[in-house]
Amino acid sequence: MCPVYINRIASIHAESSNEKPYFSAQEPDYKEMITNANLRRRMSRMIKMGVACGLECLKDISPEKIDAIITATGLGCLADTEKFMNALIDNREQMLNPTAFIQSTFNTIGAQIALLLKIHAYNVTYVHRGLSFESALIDGIMSIAEGKQHVLAGAMDEITPTSHIIQQRLGLLKGTTAGEGAQFFLLSAQKEEQTFAELKGVDTFITRMSAPEISNRMHHFLKSHGLAPEDIDWFISGKNGQEATDTVYTDLEHSLFPHALHSSFKEQCGEYQTASSYALWMVTKALKEEASSRYALIYNQYQGINHSIILIKRCTSSFL
Image (cartoon, rainbow, N blue to C red; front, side, top):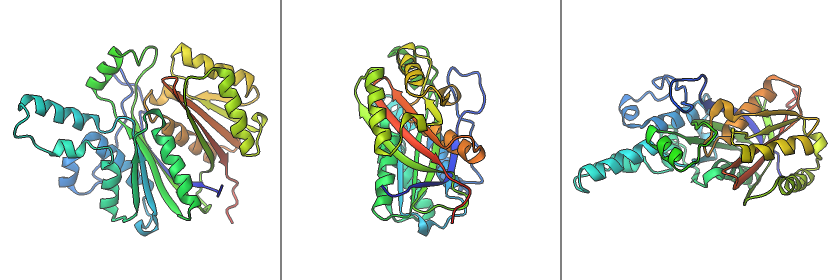
């Protein structure tokens, strides 16, 4: 496949613990990023979070250079959805304000970024549960292979008190803490001086699998990229406190990557359907700042069904 470089990154995520029972993103001052006060006022919290993160990733870049905007979300704009549903009930399905419904659609954030920057290019949003972000990355890689030079790819999800209660009642948060956040990446065909890392490949699969089956899948994935497990310096897992899935991560650490550095990321951002985007942000940022690892491998699973593997390579200081 053609080389795909990560040249810019941006993130809005939880930075410290708070009194809430879930990880809540530490939001910036949106006035500097979304200068139109009327537009900003009409945006929900998640839309502001996603749009601001995307704009930050494209800061000082000419909009004409962007060939595609690809976004991903697991549950979309929950607050707007709740607002519309409550109005539907309160007003007995009559005299409804359509704004909340319009703002609740999954592609709102990608569309808002394009409208603000006047980017008339390919624009799509993936909503594939725990593989939403990985689907966006795969589309980004394919877009670069087709000849596009710069692709903005990102993911975002929010949590509300209502959605947190529902997830608890469904038993989805046993042993783990929910979270939220927004991460964006500028994928490019050419390496630049500020390049963070190279995105070598992404693999996804949907089924319940044992540790040996996942190990075999990883072997084939690495082999397809000319690598062996011994070449991985840093293994990042999606451990979230749930014993059933964390045991699989631990087995892989011991059996497949015993000599690699082991770490996890959900204790920092919480569990949500596009949490792997935070992992990629964390890894690319570390590879840029610390030259201790060459290859990093992110393995994440959501609810034991949606599995993803992301391979990242540290770029050397030379970019010519």
